[in-house]
Image 1 (tube, rainbow, N blue to C red):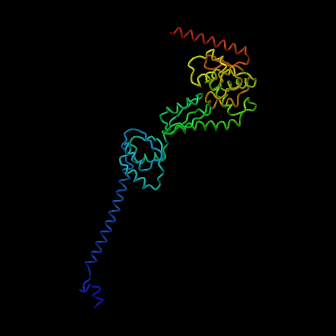
Image 2: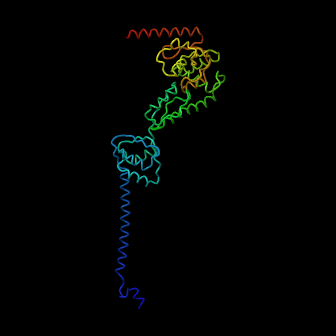
Length: 354
């Protein structure tokens, strides 16, 4: 009797109500699980739709991601700048992405109506926008510093400025916000690497012994001509004069001694040509100047370290923007007379126009 009561609850009837409750409870739990799964799937699909739908930007634009920005800061920035609609969706979808690659700092081009997915790919794999920083050949270091200080794409202060002739003028491509000091350091390092290679390959028997002397001569070559093809010939003239113990007689050296490399704005005066106190006056000093008179470019450095073999000892302007080269003083004097004639004719023409 006791065993049967235990199974029937003492009444002789099965506990059907309890069974029904258990079944209903299990069905509810299972239903809720299905509903939750469906909601999760639906939510994931909604997030995916938001992530891939066209974005709110009507026109092509750019975005600058600062260095050190985390995902939250980037998402907030994108929403603030109107590139995405909801920074929460952007963050959530990226955190769900097992293949997520790091977002890189820099300035990026974002096309009109770019989706969050497109923007995410741009920030992961896209090329940053590069801005040119052009440093022309033949400038003094002070001039280069002014260029960098005025460049709108650069940032920060210059704290370590190289000496005269210690940088390699070139056009460098940089990200917006690159520090000015970083660019200046690249200019200096560029010359160091170039000289390391060219000095080891230099021509034998050159009339100077150090890299510093090579840069001094290259800076004079740089200032003497703006015609690229002439640099080797100009270098050969100065090398030939140094070998013979002749003075260089270079006008740009006088100007550097007078202005520190700033434009003179007029012709050289007779008193400046005759100034024996100017340590850069190569009409009086023998050999090289005390230091460089500018920052020479790659072509001038190459020309000085591997000059062509010529008999030229003189050159003067020829009226075309270039120079006439001569082996003898008599030939040079004829070239000078021709240049003086051209100058007179040009002066007369200017007077007629006025």
